[in-house]
Image 1 (cartoon, rainbow, N blue to C red):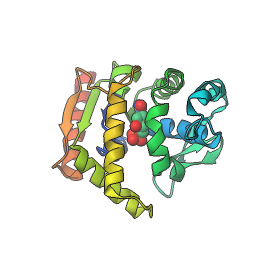
Image 2: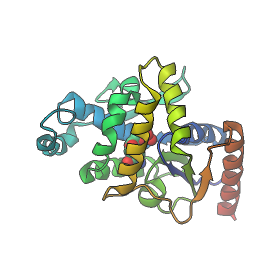
Image 3: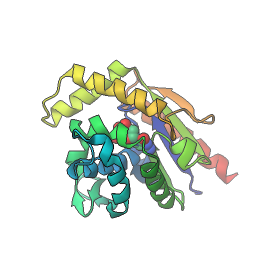
Length: 234
Ligand code: DC
């Protein structure tokens, strides 16, 4: 069967990665979580003191000058059944999902130089097709020619509640209001940034999953994908 490129974009905590991961498994495709890449760069910037401190503005230039020293790698974990993010050789999967990184990542994702570096890496990963990539600009910037594009939405409250439960399950001490505030803040910065703002690609199907279970979402998107693969062969 011919392979296609599948782009899944949308707001934060819409369940993009859960769907993308399972879809990739069903199709035997590679899955790439581009949010993890922006999160890892953010963690690096925090570790080096470039952001999240009082002289924040002054240090962005230093972060940009240091970008070439950042190596990102996805390493497949057989036991877990998914890939984990390694930053300069170290597994940072847990740190990049925690709230301190979530609070700063949108800011790092506004930087043109960061986006250029990560988009080039993503295009290289997808050059042979047969992949499902999720993010914010996959269908618009990274793979504008992707054969199948999905744009996922859900209300901010639904998304904040999902995220809140996830973080509690991981043992983090957060409040629902704090998570909702972060979701709203990221929606705003992701949608209004100058470079590659989050927006639905013209050819993307919009998917509001506020009231839809995972099984139904996956079934629908999988069937769409199969149709696209068939069409591409014809
Ligand atoms: O999908 P996520 O919540 O893990 O993404 C984290 C942040 O990274 C999000 O607030 C916006 C940014 N991002 C982006 O700008 N472009 C992408 N392709 C993926 C993520």
